[in-house]
Image 1 (spheres, rainbow, N blue to C red):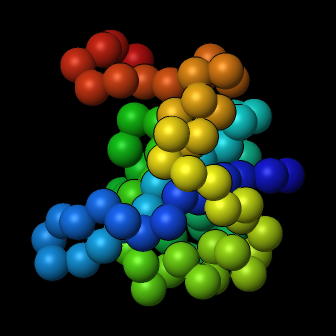
Image 2 (cartoon, rainbow, N blue to C red):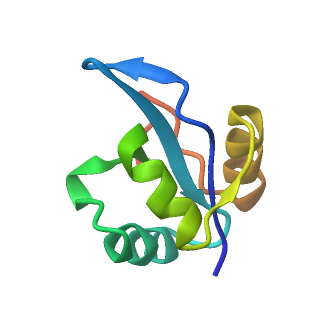
Length: 88
């Protein structure tokens, strides 16, 4: 199982955020997120929004750090990208 995470550089709600993705399946992503205590409500279309305080736990659990551009490329290449406004 490999999941990927970009650095927490996205501001919102007074926090900095990362994106957690899988290049295999949403099921793999949900299992990983659950294993680090990330609630399902943090899932948005094709990724989890992870606050910066959860970033170290994701890395410790095996998430691989990649750039934000790489996150998008991985999703597109895997056929898992769900852009805003596009039906599921």
